[in-house]
Image 1 (cartoon, rainbow, N blue to C red):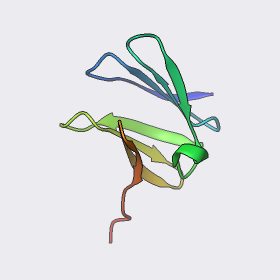
Image 2: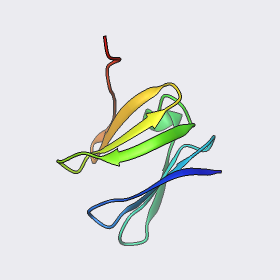
Image 3: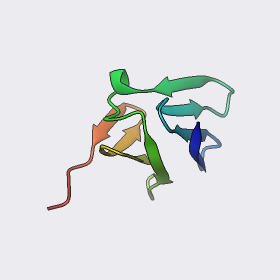
Length: 79
């Protein structure tokens, strides 16, 4: 189930799903799916945004992550 979409500045389309993780469609048409093996804390994506430097920020029901070309990094919980 598609829950959220983001069209990135680089032409990529990011699809956040409810239960199937994150789908990345690159401008060249290639597709990759990100889930727990890639570092997502949950397959339930609730929001997507792109920060000023072009990094994708994905919110899940178990925390937020930053996605870059080198991988997935968890954001710390706010104190």
